Amino acid sequence: MARGFAGESTLSDADLGLALAPALTPQGLVPVPSFFHGFATRPQVLARGLVTLADVTATRYFRPVPTNLRDPVLTAQGDRLRAECFSACNGVYARLDLLGAGFDGGEITYGTTNVDIGLSTRQALSKVARDQLLHLDVGLEGMTVSSMDGTAKERPVQMPDRWVRALGNAAEMHRGLVARLHFDVAAARQLVASLPAVTSKSRSGWLAPTRTGVQLSPRPLKDSVHIEGLHRLSAAKRLLTDIKGVWVHGPADGEPGPVLLTFELPDARLVLGLTPETWRGYSGEGSLLPALADPNVIDDADMVSMVLAFEPVIDVQHLVAATALPEDRVRSALAVLAASGRVGWDAHDEAYFHRELPDDPDRVDKDNPRLVAARKLAESGAARRASEESVWMVRSGDADYRVRLTADPTTPDLTRGATCTCTWYLRHGGDRGTCKHVLAVQLVTKASGTVTVEDTIAALESQFDTPPETPADYTHE
Image (cartoon, rainbow, N blue to C red; front, side, top):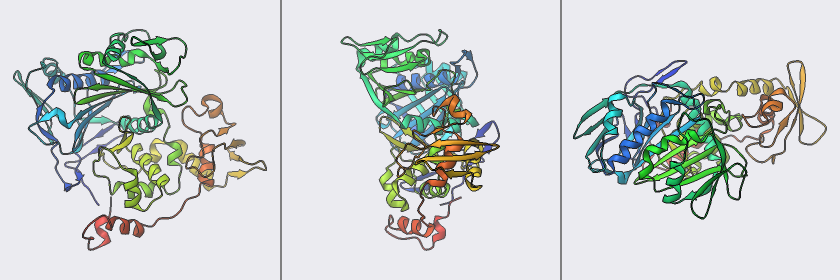
């Protein structure tokens, strides 16, 4: 299904000018969607939450320096509004989920746009009292917030291009995390109140529960989660009196790594994600590379994108049935869509969600030079099996590199646990995404079935009461 945008989206090396996305909704295609016109039932939570996002995106947590960035991405999904942003240093991901119960007198529809939270809007939101009326309007012209004290309006703005790369890596990194800790309202507020200021010296430690609340230990304790750079959570202090609890997601093996904290609010959630090191940004993590190393993955992503409809919770099994693709290929296709910023991950729901950004077919290659190099190695026959089982030799330049696979060869990700003798692995291991030599081996060895467009159209037709007249109805640009 071909979709155009309301207005013209622009793409440069540095920025993405995001026009309001048309919405393929459960009721059909809405060419010029309007997100929401109505009142907040929790006005102070909405106001403080938006200012919290402005705080995050305006802050460089690594070597703190204020910036003038204050522009979250807004996505409406029928039952909730999501506002997302990254810190100026790209090491903190922040998302405010505003649930349907938090609004009154209006209907949440479907769409995605990017707006600025300027000084006037920030000042207006900061003055909102708990019992004060607050009206929100988000649509083609941007975002307008109105209270008894006045109205502030913000226009759509350009989104930093690296945010698209960061959205994809954040989704993949957060997808691998598991719920490790939950703190009730008292312990959650104790944690937030004890956080160091944003300009403080970076502090790290192991977060663990106690009988009376929470503690930060210099050593790992039972059920503890390591957090690097506690000052990167300081923006949550603005919502201290509204916090009802917090979930902490961390690596399943209990080792230091990325973490995700979900603060429970009245009819809302604030999500803060942190990279494993304060100096590392989401845009450079390379976490999507294994999923992208599949000969069919781009075509599969096109098939999957045809049936997305701004779902707040994407049902993978529905996509399997709708596209006639195996589940592992659907998940790899979602990783490609994540690389374009078109799907995100919600740890609370343990599911992907859909946001619509302008499609850039060249983005996967442009943002992943290691993948491009791996394809060249695979196509040139540089990867060959060694005599030892699970060992490959890859010729790159004037050197031969030894790749050892340790994953089950039937799994989609053959790179998990793989090792290589190249400089990249000696320097990073598998911590910053895999090297081009391991990716080349995956491209050569991974079995890939073939599902034709005709198969997919037949599967799609079965989802409708009245099949379309011609296959052309399903063409997708």
